[in-house]
Amino acid sequence: MKFRAIKGTKDILPSESHHWQWVEATVRRTMHAYGYREIRTPIFEQTALFARSIGELTDIVSKEMYTFLDRSNESITLRPEGTAATLRAYIQHSLETQSSLTKLYYIGPMFRQERPQAGRLRQFHQFGAEAIGSSSPQLDVEMMLLPLHIYRDLGIQQFNLTINSVGCEKCRPTYKERLRSELMRVYDKLSPDSQRRVETNPLRVLDSKDENDRELTASMPLIGDYLCAQCSSHFNAVCELLEMSKVPYTIDYRLVRGLDYYTKTAFEITSTALGSQDALAGGGRYDLLVEELGGKPAPGVGFAAGIERLLLVLSRTNALHIHPPVPDLYIVALDEEARTVAFQKAIELRARGIAVELDYQGRSIKAQMREANKQGARYVLVLGSNELVSGKGMVKEMVSGKEYEVFLEQLELPKGLE
RNA sequence: GUGGCCGUAGUUCAGUUGGUUAGAACGCCAGGUUGUGGCCCUGGAGGUCGUGGGUUCAACUCCCACCGGUCACCCCA
Image (cartoon, rainbow, N blue to C red; front, side, top):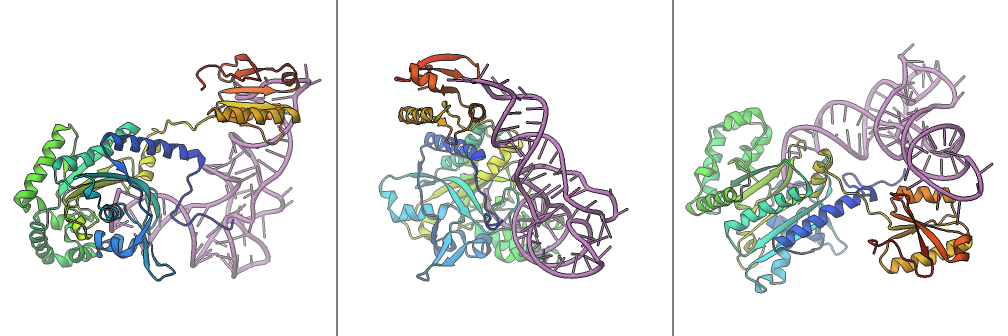
């Protein structure tokens, strides 16, 4: 075999595209219910946009982006996430002048060059939402409710919501330095990964999976104790709203996000049906990002959710019940003349919105009936010389085997079809 | 990116201590007489045994590299 899809990319074949359509339709319906409108941005942007928003030192920017020079020697990057481009568009088109609060959602492919494994592809798909222009904790909670609502609608039973506050520009630096100095005391005993993180992202050391690291950091100060009054009350408000919404959640003061732009609220939704790649969705508040990207200062909050992982959970919990679409009518034709009439009838019926399928290969009646059955056609009409002469035929309802007489001139299908 | 495991028909797999024409099931195609599917029966097509080297008289079976997948780490959706 000469050509194959690039490592870490996948073809979505007809046997599963209907599952995707179902998920996407559910996402759109729910987004609408929460007042979000779709935005579609290009899948590539100037590299600097991502470096600026996500953070130069993050793993995503420093080693996972698909970055290349185009023919004009401009550095281009395939988007690794959706927020940066969404905010860029928000700023570029001055959406803040349209209304004081902008609520947007997106669905589409993202790109990150990581080592692939189940639930982690190089081209993967996310849906997500952004609310720009308000610092209300209600929106923080809405960002958690949105994906949870979608998961419930799709039939996912088990998930865990974990939240934290990562502070703001006033309180985080103080905590960060305090933590870093604590970490330096045990630096030599930390795992190599954590040693690296002490410099780049000390908060992340607390999130280490290394047993020894966990012991070393067990009694170290947590961000929760260092939040400023504003961050603290915001976080409390978020917790209260979650209580009110009756959404189970846990607070994890060690939770950190991989993107630098988060302030205050950070959260993650995980599923036990997944392996090590267990994050279904993640998000948080980014009150400084719009300004950082050159826009008029505006607070914002958002989330992103992975579609492949969502489908993985659904298939592992046997929750994929959606069937592919079927033809309303399959026309079986027995000879050349009948095939011409069948084609003509198909054109007429399709024009009326009826899904009609027929044989294009001159196959036997048996083969055509089998095909109609395999495709799940609801009705079958057999056309042969008898029908062409009499102008009448029988439409057979496949599930019951019952047959109804119809006139070919003005073909009517049993009611309920149109 | 690091380490472990895996890689045989479209799919899921079998394949004896390396030894002649690589099998099954499902799927696909065609038949089972006169114009009607689902079950059943029969037949057929389909594989350079991931790719490339090497060891050997001989390799799908051993070794190496690469490619792909997968598990964990890393990271995250």
